[in-house]
Image (tube, rainbow, N blue to C red; front, side, top):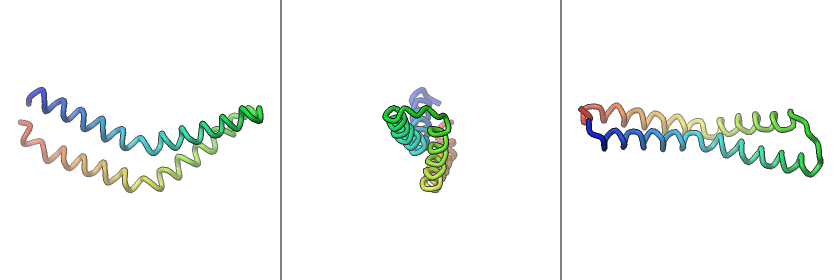
Length: 88
């Protein structure tokens, strides 16, 4: 196993992890920004006002992108298992 193949596997793992976390993180970021903007304009400082919409939004994002996330993870795992003989 050479250094190049180890680096390639690490880069692939990081790319897959970024792709899988992006829908959830972007949804949470956008909802958090909108809620904080609303709170700063109205000066309402309620914790549940920020928490509940984020939970609902992340749940909806998981429902929408969950199938794609699962297929991405399965494809990565299959390619990783298929590449094991070439790594030895």
